[in-house]
Image 1: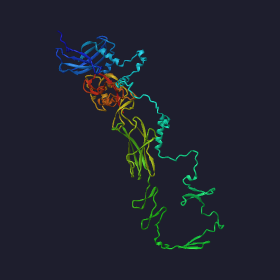
Image 2: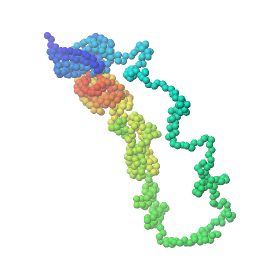
Image 3: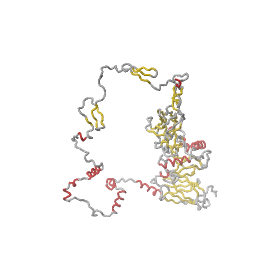
Image 4: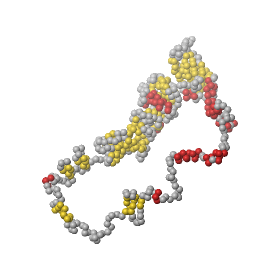
Length: 590
């Protein structure tokens, strides 16, 4: 009898549809060897294929699952969990369907699926759209579950059609009907209450035609008799009124001469003589005739000055061009270099990525030039700025350069901002040059991708492609790719290069990503495990990026046969056989 090379695998399978999730089929089988013994605690790889029409028909779905049998040789699988996208695309109405199982590369049987297709096809009723034309025009078509809930709630209140409450009332009191109060409205009462809040205003209002008596106007503060053109008034503290006033000055020449009052003055030592018609002499007493205490300067020059030092007058030589005379610390005047308006220099913005969202830090350098100086930053979306914020170090003083900063929050990520530093002291204002920055943030569109990671500068990071690049295998099963085992952020690009250099298979995940040219960039790559994890956390879980709740390949290799993948539905990661087909999403650094 010819010896059998392959092990005979005995598979006893049962099918059931998950009661919790109808997107997969439960599958159980006993794995036996050629002698009929159960393969206990053994690693097996099963290829599951769904075939349409006949046992030899076309393959509508396939996936590979690697698992370990239990102590009875039993494996429990969920068909569709490794390739949910392909499983969901099966048209179960186009039966019959057959399932073909291969264990460790050997086909062990093909069986027809009988009940499973109908149960899965029944799911379509979840999204059934009513098309009955009679029902569509009937009033009941608009009844919602909320309406029914409210009606049931009202029914629980009991019959209140004749509950005995007052439904209508007409006032019939003859006294009230004849009263003026019968016409009072709620609006009247509201207005009266408002007026009452103004306080007592009795006598404040007069008819529009009323003309006041003069005595009513602040007790007649003005007393005018026979007023004429150019009349002057002065205030009298006696009468507490403004009264006519005639100035006490000459209005015409009395003696007919306008020059006879002019005198000639002459000084002779300590005598001042007034000549002409006066002829009077004034003699000055205590006249200083001692010239020994007179102030003199040795070889004085133009611009020299004197100051009193408390006992005597002391000379100050003139200063040089650009100096100013100021009071020194000793209380004596001294020349110093000119005080200038402050200098201002705008520096590039930096970013604080430890906050959410990222904040911008405006930077500059200011020299106060020895005067207290106020420092602010002007900023906005144009060079007109429109907003300003005070520097954290303001005000500054001294004669040296001072680094100044301002931390801005509440900015809009992805927006271009202009800014400059402004310095103001008693001598004037100076501005730094205009500079600009774009505030980056997780989840914004940038360089034809979506940012999912920023480094600590806030200027660089990683973007994911705006959409998936397709579904394919990792490639090169049973081949170890040297240098493609990086898992940390920043290793995805190198992994991709190593995979392409070490695996010639066309159409694999790394090649699809590297050949992607979104935004005319040619440096896209298959993300590493940790980079793919950041896509899941920062984009998919926030509803950004249009990711599927399915498996995605990373570029991180774990062994000859496996590479790391992320399940975006279960939010978990694990090694998986390289020949499995998963979704790929390219990334690039900026």
